[in-house]
Image (cartoon, rainbow, N blue to C red; front, side, top):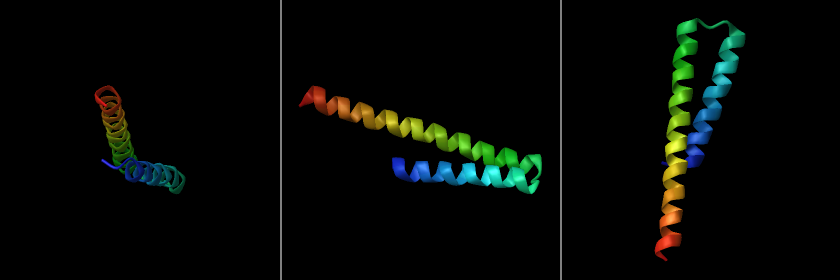
Length: 62
């Protein structure tokens, strides 16, 4: 997973959430945007963790 793509996705979902709240979107639409935002954040955490474990493996094994 590419960390830059995930952070761009999270930023876009966050902006959509803020804009949707201001534009008066329904709670269902906001819930879908929030769910996508949380999913993206979870994937970002997994990507960062895997990169860190990879770097630690290189340091320990090298």
